[in-house]
Image 1: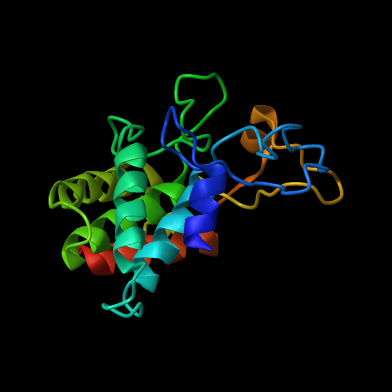
Image 2: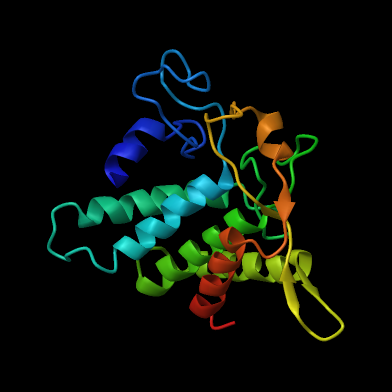
Length: 202
């Protein structure tokens, strides 16, 4: 599945993976020729990166495709790192940080931080990704964490939910991604933030 998805969704120009691919090309969000959705979504990329770095914990070391998975992780990390903002964070629509309405988003950022940190700690990724993970974690603390007067922690700027198709129909347009509601302490963001903090001993 990891190999198939990279083969079908990887963009040659950016190295990023599109949010989705419809083999039938029948969905309204799918390109008529490629079957791909129109944009890169940081949380979709983040799910893939986290799953990949976690799967390698259990993947047999002598399996013929183990190195292929590590190579995929490295290609993905290199592509994602290009779009890390100066804050250390990533945008909701990954490659369009300068487009009006786009915003820095907590779940995708947390997922990338975790994948970078664990990948470097395990030796799957070069050590430079540990520094990028630290920068991302610092950015999350500075820009997304709010402390109440009694020191309760709130993680903000989490896209509550996004997807494609369904009813009402989710088109996959840029305007669609930036219109989804933001939520505080949504598990999509809190889980990766906790995993990243453990991986970085933070």
